[in-house]
Amino acid sequence: MADAAIINPSALDPGAIDPENFTASLLRQATGKGLLTQQEAQSIQEGLLLLLEEQVQRLTQGESSSLPTQRAEELMDGIGYCVDFYLQSLPTLEEALEALQARRVAQLYEAGRGLLEEHAKASEGLLSRVRATRVATPNLGYNRTLDVTLPGYLRQWKRARYPQGFPVLAEYPLAGDRPLPEGIAGVHAYLAALALENRFCARFAAQVPQVLEAFARQYRTSPEEVYGNLFSLTLRSLLFSHLAEEAGPLPSREGLASLELRLALLPPGQWGEVLGQAAQQLLAAWGFENPKLEDYILAEARRLGHGVELSGGKLAGLAAAAPGDGQLIHLDGERLDDDAFAAVAEELLLCDQPERKAQIIQTEVRSLEDLRDLLDGGSVFEEELPGLFAQLDDATCALLLTCCPVEAAGRQVALGGDSDPWQDALADYVNQLEPQRRSNLLGLFRSLAV
Image 1 (tube, rainbow, N blue to C red):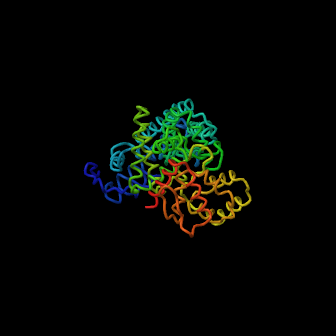
Image 2 (image 1 turned 180 degrees about the vertical axis):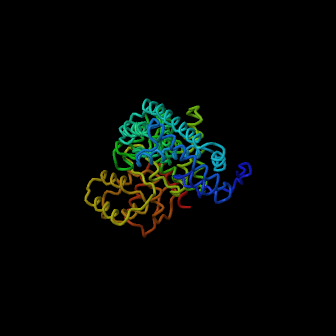
Image 3 (image 1 turned 90 degrees about the vertical axis):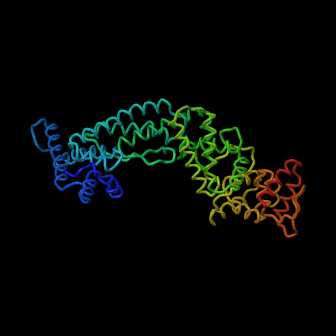
């Protein structure tokens, strides 16, 4: 027999192992690398066949040594699944190979079956817990997952004649849409994560509906139909609100715009750090005293930080704002394609109510360049420009001023002679603001224009 104690830890290649056929691919690789003799491999194969024969005898109460072909294949698959599951539970391939060499196949089978039953038992308890602590929400995906999908998986497991794997698919995504193992272990992992998420959401039970409603507006759908994770959406809203130095569960539109401008002043590599520090500060204030939940929250904050990095510091698509006081906010984001831009322009032309025009822009336009192009098309707004600017937050007005030929911006805005009508209207609007607000807006403009 090959000496398991001298197996080279780097000899086995995890990339050459097929997770769907773990034991067979491990045997092939170990034999090919000389870590297992042909005789040992043959002995393990014979052990599988002997175990199959023993199981057939047990199922037929000793009256037959055979089963119908399909059922025999299902039984063999069940045996292989249990052996694979146990070996995959071991920390390293080397330990899995040592177990194959040192233990009978029947022992590996029973060990794997025992682990699977532990997952099933734990899943039943967790399902009861997550349903007892469920979030009060109209979200259909969340409710169907708790009421239909997860109980269905447990029934499927109990009714199966032999242990087997199955993909774990649910209508409601976990935070980060994290990948799950297959079979009952995946159900257990899903429920364990959902139990943590429910505990978080219970702390913010009054805020979760507000957050869901805000993201429903963002996604242009209803709270019932939102495909999103309540824990993740609520956490990111609380983080952005904290960073915007606001107290509510949702940041204001102006707070988001200011936060985006502050992020733009940081090196890209620091955006994730800022989110992580904010999460640590909030955890200290919340005092969950649950290490697993705290680690879960920090992991989600890191994922959000990565999302901010990927977006180039742009918060459009990542954040949803609290319902405002009619102000229009502009967060620079993805530009509309030509057809979508034309459709928005046509809708604005057909509308004769300034408030409705502002609402259309608020809903449809996420790019500064698109907003500027619409303003350049003077016929879209005509006499409504002063009313439109009155609904813009100060950060957006400051951004628009950077698109103007500003010659002076001390106490008043002065434009050059080649300004467009909308630029003149914007300058007039800013100059008519009360002094302190005008001073703050122009200070923000000067910081952006550097």
